[in-house]
Structures are given as structure tokens and as C-alpha cells.
Image (cartoon, rainbow, N blue to C red; front, side, top):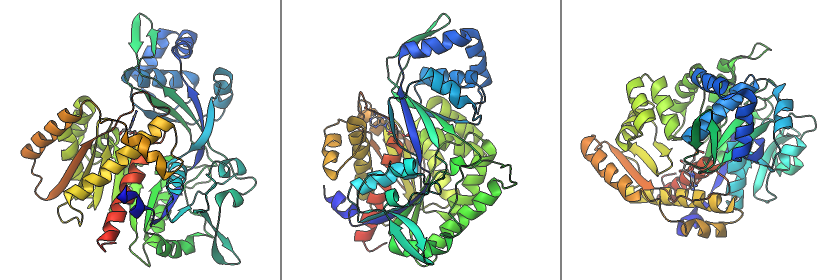
Amino acid sequence: MGLIDDIQKLSLYTAYNTNVDAITFLKGEIVQGLIDEFGADAVRKRIEDYPREINEPLDFVARLVHALKTGKPMAVPLVNEELHEWFDSHFRYDVERMGGQAGIIANLLANLNLNRVVVYTPHLAKKQAEMFVDRPNLLYPVVEDGRLAFKHPRRAYREGDPVKVNRIFEFRAGTTFRLGNERIEVPFSGRFIVSSRFESIRIYTDPELKPFLPEIGLQVDGAILSGYQGIKLRYSDGKDANHYLREAKRDILLLKREKDVKVHLEFASIQNRELRKKVIYNLFPLVDSVGMDEAEIAHVLNALGYSKLADRIFTYNHIQDTILGGKILVDEMNLEVLQIHTIYYIAYITHSDNPLSEAELRSSLELATTLAASRASLGEINSPEDIKAGMKVPYNEHGEFVKLRFEEAKRKLRTREYKVVIIPTRLVKNPVSTVGLGDTISAGAFTSYLAMLRKKNAL
Ligand code: AMP
């Protein structure tokens, strides 16, 4: 694949979030056991309450059952540290691996043989550091004798740093269980993430490293930033989300100071509306590119005040509404490019003066879905060769319908001031794992976008 050769010439920076994913493959009996433990009525009632955070076990069971019923991937923060014992007594972990968008993307890009991947994460305990792949092109920035230096993350860990463990429950389409007299069959394979949100884990650049961000910016062709969903509104030491977002803004401006390095922000679900709004308003205007999934675009539109359109996307999931929402976002935040991935299609929306042609944008999305299909088939991408696995995966069976609906949407919406391209996804029937597929799509899309810009001398 020619595009991969071009991607390999790039150097990328990625920050901030890494964690250890403790993965459990859920069986129907386990879910049934949980429902029986708490009683179907109590679970049903708590689903109606729809807790936004996990404070006690029933919050978890309710949100899990809800996710299983809809088959939609979801992440809910765990705020009560004491629940770890409850989880440990109820679940066995089948696998532990690299989690967090920055960690997943760093390993992926290093394995694809990019020239250089610089990864920064504020907490790097030994256990976390060991989750990074052992590749010479993967580097962690450190300050030594007042100068910027790079080390492999496995050699840069700090004793005593906290480790963030996220619990991931992978579910399979077709799994069945009963909620009282209701029989539930899981419609899609996916994952439910219980993400730890504790005081000790923060999203920031160490003050010692911060002055070197312009130098890092000079050395890379692009940056992928993520993890803002991990910011808490308030901390016990008096710091708050405003503080961390102000610093996050400074980081982006510093990266861009010496060279206008392209920055992609990977947006993940933020349950708290206030924080979601702050992330959007503070950061979107500073970045060039944003990636998100369909649930997130609805949340974002809601935060921007387009609640009717957001509700329509939530309820009907029509391509036309998603594209309309995307146009609004590209315009209001003046993004260079917006990438939306859904289960059946991936789309780019840009202004019409984007240097890439629609065909080029399409080939970037092709690479993205092929990478995701490779990861879904193999569980991991260990080398550029692994992309072949994704090429064997056919486009999903709704592909033709997607194209038709898209053509229809284009006729109905004014799209002349934009470039809108869409492709159906290559969908793996029985994925080994669904964790990190969205991140894989976004990393594949953004790097191939950069690679093509570079070829046109537009980078
Ligand atoms: P996210 O919700 O951000 O993790 O993104 C998940 C994305 O991964 C979806 O939007 C799909 O495009 C893709 N995806 C999900 N399941 C599969 C699968 N079984 N095979 C290939 N791609 C998938």
C-alpha cells in the first residue's frame, strides 16, 4: 500500500492518556448472576435513573445492562475508589494490556514503522511503561541537564507514579440473559468501560517539560491529543477543570509556536455536560482536526445548543442528520477537518478549500477502516504486514444503503461549501476485541491525511 509508505516517513507526537486495561470477556451467566444478585426490579429502576458515574455496584450493573441491551460501546467513570474490591471479588481478568488513547495510538504508530513516535503521558509507572511496545522509533521526552532528551518509555518510568486501571467488559453479539421476564439478546459486539477517575491521575504536561513543547513541535509532522475526558471538574487541592484546560490550551499553542504543526484532537465521551462544553469551547478552536464517533457528535451538538438535531441523531441515526451536524461543527469551530466514525460508515467533512481532493480524502478513510478491521481481526497490529488481514474483510452489508443515503443527503443539504466524503466500514463479524478501534481509525485517518498533505507540500 503506497499510502503506508508515505505515513512511515512521518513523525508524530501523542499525549496524554495511558492506562492499563483489565479486560473481562462477558458471558451471559455472569450478567445473569449480577442481575439476580441485585434483583431485576432494582436494576430496571436504576437504569431509568441512568447514573452518570459509578458510586456503588448497582450503578455499574444498571449501566452495563443498558449498554448490553443497546449493544452500544459506552464508558462510565468510576469515582468511588473503594469499589475496586467489589470488582475484584466479582470478576476475573482475562487480559491486561495498554489502554488509553495516547498509549494505544503510540503503540499502533510505532508498530506501523513511523519514523518517530513521541509519546507523553504524565504518569509513567513501571507497569504502565511495560505496556509500550519495544520499538526503537517509540520515544518518551525527558529533561536531562536542562535539555530535551528522548528515551524509550520502558527506560523512562518513574517509581511511585500512580497507575490507572480501567476495567473493560467485552461483550459479544448474541449473548442472552433475562431481566425479570424480559429476554435480552445483545445486538452488537462491543465494550463497556469502567474508567477510573481518581484524584491522583491528572491530564497535564509536567512543568519541567512544558518549555520544550515548541522544540517537540518542530521535530514532528503532527500531534494527536486525547484524554481530556479524564479531567475532573474539581480537585481536593483546589485546582479545577478551568485550570487544566487553560494549561491544555497553552500546550497546543506551545506545540505550534515554532511551526504550525497540525493537531488532531480525539474526542471521547464526556458524561458531564459542563466539562464537555468546556472542552469543546476551549480546545476545538485551537486544533486543526477532530475525530469522534456518532454518539459523541450528538453530545457535542447538544452542548452547542442544537438539542433537536442531537436528539434526532440519538434516536434515528440518519446519515443526513450526522452530516448536517458535522457541517455545523466544522463551521462554528472553524475546523480544517472533522472525522466521524460510526459502526457502518466513516466520514470526513472539510471546508471546500481543503488541499486534498475528495478522492484523496476517501483513500485516507479507506486506510483507516482497513486498519480497524485488521485490529478487530487480529486483536492487535504488530507490523505493517498485518494490514493485509483488514483488506480481506468485506465492507459491511449496509454499505450500498449507506452510499444511497449519502447521495440523498448530499442532494438535500447544501454541501457546496464543503467536501463531504463517506465510506462504508469493513466490519469484522467476530472481533477479537473492540477496544481501541475508534482510536485506530482516527490515527489511521489523521496520519494518512498528513502524509497526503506532505506530498502536496501543504504541510
Ligand atoms: P469508538 O466507539 O470510538 O471506539 O469507535 C468504534 C469504531 O470502530 C466504530 O465506529 C466502527 O467504525 C469500528 N468498529 C467497531 N466494531 C468493529 C468491528 N467488529 N470490525 C471493524 N470495525 C469495527
